[in-house]
Image (cartoon, rainbow, N blue to C red; front, side, top):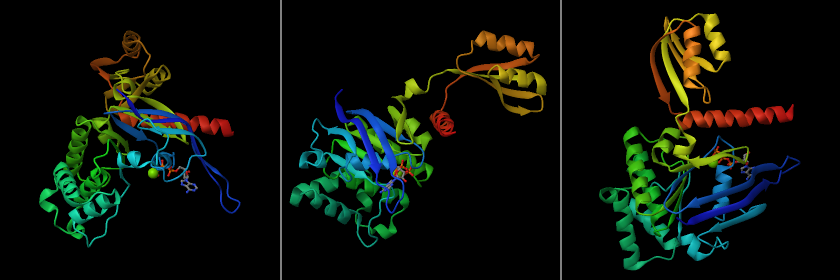
Length: 317
Ligand SMILES: Nc1ncnc2c1ncn2[C@@H]1O[C@H](COP(=O)(O)OP(=O)(O)OP(=O)(O)O)[C@@H](O)[C@H]1O
Ligand SMILES: [Mg+2]
């Protein structure tokens, strides 16, 4: 496993214009992305994702720190450029062009031409399942088809690395599944994918590793299975009073749902399951079901961002 993208203390401060305050968009990012993985780069709006991506692409310059891509810090060299495909968020292509014309245009930007370019166009159209629609105008493409042409565009130079900003946003469940399958296939063929997305269910299904950014600071980093461990317990039970449930909540056993007699309780991570069951007995609950529960990526995200926000608030006050 080799590292294809590495950042060391990567920092970006935007200068404030007209007396405005400067924005610390990214602070000391240390990140290594390995070959053949799908890395999910997550964070709420304004957390610094696009800023990072733009620096990796050489579109804006870091204020501090270093970037290495494919073993070189010369990230605007032709070799690096050819090896990074980029799908911008909400990529727009002119309505009057045909799918294949767009690919031709982008291929030429990479210095491709003639039979070689034709071969690449055929290959990427096949890759994204758009061979039959290649001669249709963009105007007539659905959102899913546009997104697939966008991906084909990112693939035209046969890059080792793909950087995709919100690849599944606005797609219906079937188009999403298709996009997911295409991305997984690309990963299996050895490509490295960096995906920025707010669609955490999608991300959880396809990525190997994730990082969560907040306020320009990387808050959490790990493989999906490290991040989402079976740490919690869900208990279904009957009974309980407002008081006894409040007592349980104080001890980390929180009522998630209460319909009549029926309860669903969540036991916080770190509480011994036997202790939890004893506490439920003390609260006169009758047990219906006990199950381990894996946190979803969405829950992890909400928790991590919530904690970072709380820390920020307490630092200000
Ligand atoms: N050109 C710029 N000049 C000044 N500030 C900027 C500029 N671009 C971004 N910012 C600020 O930097 C911070 C990070 O923005 P960025 O676009 O990287 O966030 P993001 O994580 O991509 O958000 P989103 O999920 O909304 O796309 C924000 O506070 C944003 O307002
Ligand atoms: Mg963004």
